Image 1 (cartoon, helix red, strand yellow):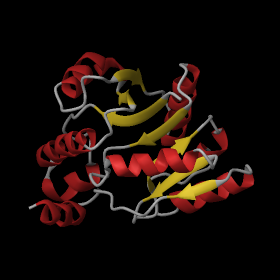
Image 2: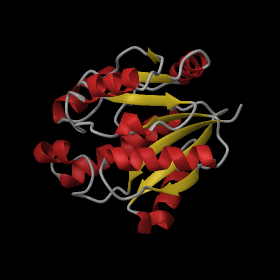
Image 3: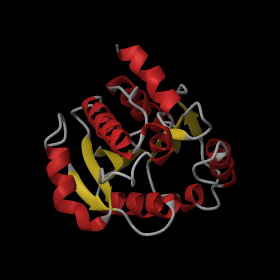
Length: 204
């Protein structure tokens, strides 16, 4: 079975990434932190799974490809420009495209959760064999991973993105669509300076 990890990234331009973090540490430092988080997440992905990088903005393909390819685990990436619209629209279109290209199981992630490990993906694929969806909840009420075996537009519409209601609304949408969902252990996202400082302490 062809499996893909779909990683959402933005080109690391100061002022365009980690804006909540930038509010207290400044745009330049927030951008440096963002680059580090992407590198840590990439390094934690299982080598046996395909990697598709959904990037934004679309006109930065060359720069994003050079950046990602230079990181551990990034050389194998396939690149896909993100669609226009809110996060839900971009997630929906990217998943439709990846499934259309022949992948049969897809786990979409961002770069906010440096605690991702190969073991988490092993658990994801195992659970997905017996469920319609797998959700990795984040401690802030969102999610750090969503895995599917086929597209489901209902999971991405009417969601209050970037709020603490994302997980609950997604689970409600999944239930309404008749999907069997398995939840992984909750993990922390890095969104604020406090989040970053707390994670730094765990890695020394």
